[in-house]
Length: 615
Image (cartoon, rainbow, N blue to C red):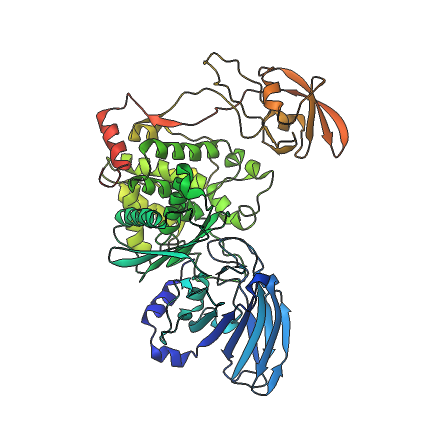
């Protein structure tokens, strides 16, 4: 989420005079029995003498583009004025009206249930609580887009200590008391309560805080903080300077959940408490740290114009998530590499996985990245067994286009400019105003010295049917390792070395099976798709012989591409036989490696692109 530029300026210039113009809203959240997963909220709200006070709760949270109906966790809404109880009527799924009877201030109370372990929702238990703004506060409708202030107090159980958050401290200096200049800040400042390991460090003269909750002694907090510091430094080096926050807070919950969500001056991330001990998982975590921190520039401040001011009660559509999320995904691991915590080979492996994921998604030839962005509200957060056939991720697809665009900018500019330069220019121009897709393309063209709008449009406004890697491979001195054909994901996955390696190729269906041989996905335009095999079918036998659970991969090794095979399936307990002609698997991997035949200039460009700090 990005605080709209006008509100952002208002936040910076907010003074006591503004407080008199807009009386504070006072919220107190208490946890009398956190083991029940409930919090109690008391809100003292000025009415201005109006006969009715209409309250709303956000239905979605910025950065996570799905209407989530947070109000379903609100119960027991009551109100009182100086003369006693007041009538409260619910008028919509997320709206309530208080009959004030002319009271200058009313006190509203409600209970809030929180037991959804995700970065965008609330979790309340005996040991700790994660409180996000959107699913927590009932706010007067007239104060949603107006200047605050919002006074917020958290009263946790004894032993929880002071809350961890980027919310501005209250002028009264009391622990657990905060004053936000506006509702956007309240929504954009998650709060973690409970005992945690805290490490602090400075970058660019600004304080940064890493809060580790739930590690159980399995994480090296000092080493983790040092790693985060290096990621922050790599990000700052790319952008040229840190954003204008006073401090930045990394809230890291080690709860066996996954995910991350960006905020203006903080982020919430979730990972396994065991991840630090496994090098590959530690690198994945650092990629997440890099991704969320990169958002402090890209989307939180430099944003698509549609993402602010926000309408918290309905969808806010944009076609530019391939920029906001996709380019961020391109840079997340790249900056871990530049921070010196990933080898060149490890980074190329990560980029190869991104390429492979996009190439093996049939939906890339159906839906453009712009359309995938626009439809995030109905597709990205609601995937099903057919999603791979109908859409493409603006994360992975955007990252791939980001890499190709980086190569195009370099080549077009005679290798004097890079995508880094485009982003710095965009940060300078759009940091407070937002951008349209056309403006972003025009700026990229200006930096590259060539009109890139048609090039960009072919890759984001139209489906990615065929992807040309030639220029990028040449620019960075890379090639794809020749590993021959192989298999798709799941039980239809081959483990042989493929063509030309002395191993006969296995026939291929183009489906995925679980451990019980139940079909979980059928890819478009594959033998399984043509034969009418359905998700939910159970594969029982081939050519009259039973296929044991997990045994399809070994069984299909008996048949070459082009062979006709009779399969026995069970569909809703009814047996049926289908004949299918096995196909030839698509390319198994898209593994990048340095091209030994690349010239010295290409090798130098690759080294500069991947240059680690001090390397």
